[in-house]
Image (tube, rainbow, N blue to C red):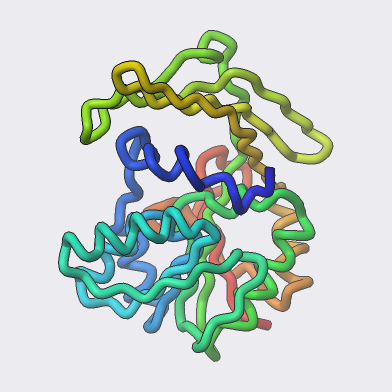
Length: 249
């Protein structure tokens, strides 16, 4: 499956009820206010935290590769009375009408790019859309293998129509040399006698700090800081999510 097609169909339909958490808008609001406006969220999905930032009056656009997720975002925006500008584009093929003082991803969405080539293309697109003096924020992490006892264990929720919704990891493959981990996820929707079950591969591609800095440099960007989610500088061997700030060189 093309990674850009993952968040479509049943995955987009049951994403909201089954997501384990929503991104805290505070770190991204602070980043945008510090870096300047306008701002752009890459991989905005169904609207967290983009809608919260727009409710605060911040000039933030969004981009996502899934038309289905953007439809969910627009529906949520309409329900909340929020005006949004979003674009249906791949992160690695950006072609937007303006440049931005702040470009960011909320959470480690960058790891969903399948390989270094796609990552480089995305970084080049960010560089091309960055205003003079602008800043890019890219959260990164290294995924841990799924514990054996969690394989096949479903996370469940109830849909608005009473349907039982389930998602589980049914298999996993990890390649340390390629820096990829692919989970086969099973999505299920059961409502009375009607059932939909679909398996989809979900691949994460991670980076060493050195490799990410090399890719950024090739794209014309330099890492100016590495922090935690609260903006505090961290050691290079920190195992949590690292927030890389980049500027044009």
